[in-house]
Length: 470
Image 1 (spheres, rainbow, N blue to C red):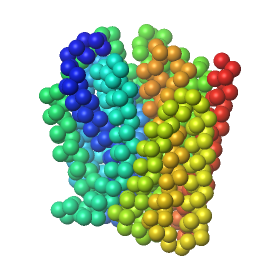
Image 2: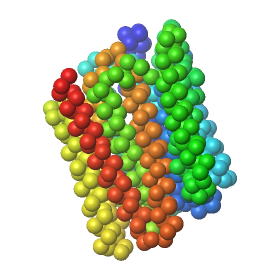
Image 3: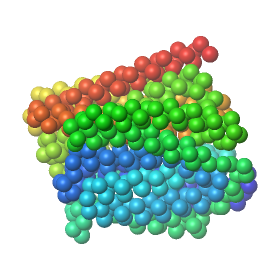
């Protein structure tokens, strides 16, 4: 099928297709960070509770994480182009819904739908790159893809602060969602005209039950962390969380049953016996728990704690994002030669950046945004050293036949980590903030980030020992 699709697209046209799918990935990446910058303004305008603030981010990630593997399967069944178009148009419509939301509850539901449509769109990006670039140009195509991922963060922070500040046509924070509408329509129109049609893969079946059970389990497990503060951590919350754990155990049993019946389970069960891969997933989980939650805490601290305006707060992240891009370009080659050592060094740099943030904010009452920006460069560079090669390192022991399923498991783990981090660390931040202890909420969060990154480094070292023995 690779050769068939490649023959359909001449050399110049496939770069146009690359531009289309990478633009969709860029829109998705910008959306993840632009919402972080706008969150404090959204909370005030919609009178959102702390739980609703966290849920606006976390429910999007939960929907995306639990459905992204399904989105990839649908691309196999109905064709990459068709599912990509459905995802882009769905993402466009749900972005409009987010911008029109009149309450915190409605915005959460709209974000759930937006995450689900993103799970249709994003898997087709990498699938299209794999199909179109089978020659020496593949490394160049994926290098462009990687750079776009890093630049999306910088653009999201800058655009979020800018749109909230200029209050475009009186739309305020709503414009951070409305901006996806014209972009999505242009991407969809270009894809309709230029993307090649990919025939469906015969014999591929969708594990719908697995997707539903996984979503229910994660929602029961993470949801109480989001709303616990609002209901005073009632005893029934712990029952819901316990049921979430039980549902996830049932999910594994269901997947085994699907495999025995000759179906295609959501995850490749043979991967559960790969010790190095499982330890790598553990490292990825703890790394991502400290990923988006860091940006949420920093945004809330700067805008609510230090009273820094949204535009200045957004711009403070740009040096971090650029340092991330530079580190990403450096880390690939270094990781090929030194393996997990580079990632562990990146973890140590992140911890050093967190310590520097604690010192600056501890000794200076009102640090300037530029000072915070300079300190965060350390964290951003360390994060880039880890994130860019992390997926390759985690998948390094996986057999080629299981590469697709392993990639899906990695992506799902990453987004579950992001959601769990926003929920758990966000809950701790708001709980300490409620005690009105000056800056304690921020310092507790920094300590949590340092602990999580240390655990990530420990898992990487553990994985290295297992890989060395095999």
